[in-house]
Image (cartoon, rainbow, N blue to C red):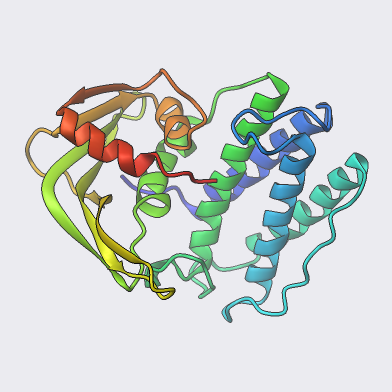
Length: 266
C-alpha cells in the first residue's frame, strides 16, 4: 500500500490539530480521557503541544541528533496551555513545511530509511489524528476519521509502532501470515508472524517473544484475517476503538497476534 505524499500529511497535521484544539477548548480541563486513563483534558492538551514543540526542535536542528533541547515549562492555567499549543503548533507546521522531506533528520526509529524529514511528516500526522480522537472521546463528541489517513495508519501502526526491530535483536519468521483487510480502501496490510530475540544494551535478555513484521502478500490465504473499515482498524490497533473489527482464522495465530498487539502504544 502506497503512503500519502508530504503535502497530504501536512494538510492532515493542520486539520487534525485544529480539530484537537477546537474540541479541547470547549472541554472541561479536568474531563477524563478514557483512552488514556491517567490523563485529563489538560494533560492531553499539554502532551500534544509538547510533542510538537519537540519535533519543531528536531526539524530546526537537523540533521544532528537533538541536543540542548530547551525543555518547556508547563503553563499553570488552561488558557495558557491553549496558548502554548497555538504557538508551537504554528511554529512546528511552519518549519516542517519549509523542510525538504528528503532532508536527513533524526528520528527514534532504528531504521536508516526513517532518518529523514519524511518520517516526521507521516508520524506527526498520525500523532495528531490519534490524539484528536482522544480529545473527542474525552468530550463525548467523536467524529469520523479520514479514510485515507486511517488506512495509512493501519500500515504505519503495524510497521512502525509494532514492527520495529533494534539493531541488537533478530526476528525469526515462522511462516504464518495475518491479513488486515481494509474494507473501505480496497486494500490489505499483511504481516508475518515470528519471534523476537536479543540482548538489550541494558543487559535485558529477550528470547523467542511473539513478534510480527510487515510482509508482502504471500500468494496464499492468510492464517488469520482482521477485517473492518480503515477507521475501525486504525482505532483498534491504537486501543481507541473496539467491537468493529471482525477476526477469522486460526486461534493460535490470533493468540500470537494478540500478544503483540496487547503491548501499549501512546
